[in-house]
Length: 201
Image 1 (tube, helix red, strand yellow):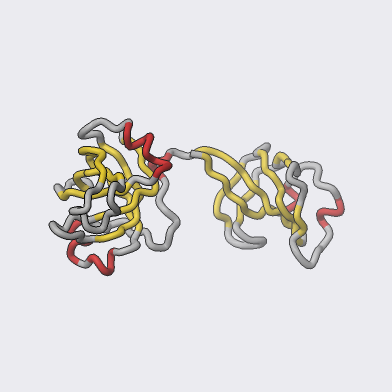
Image 2: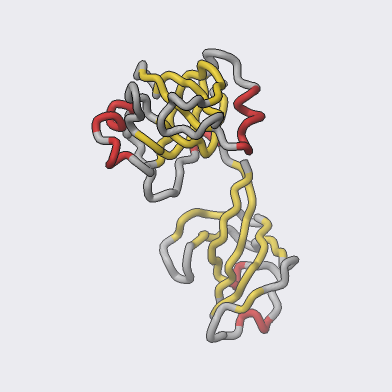
């Protein structure tokens, strides 16, 4: 997964910056799309000029300058991190939410985001008896999350159908999903809309 982050660096640490970039300006000045530089020294990465550091960049790290403002350069860097370390930045994300929590208070759970490890059972198509699912809507029948033995309906968007079709029964997967219905009729199975799906190796 490609991670792109925009942040600010003091202009003085960028190699070969034009002198006019260091002059004060009333507002950030957009830079050309190919305004690429290497850092001349190790430096801190900040999310705003003068704010606390949010990370450190090594000397010679390549950055793209996307704006300049009063001695600072807003930069974009690109790199890779393990998919397993990512959690949603969505404010509705709830790390400890279980299937039992969804069934206990479905109204409060609606719209919340979860990241669950589940066991894939089958890829199915909804019929009119599945309340909360559109007729012929594709969904994964799964068990979980984690050590829970609850059945789950995980709705599959068109963009992830290829991934879902490739899964084998009893495969372990990690899904990021948003709660549609914490206790669907007629038997109370939670329904969630999948945002991402990743097989656990």
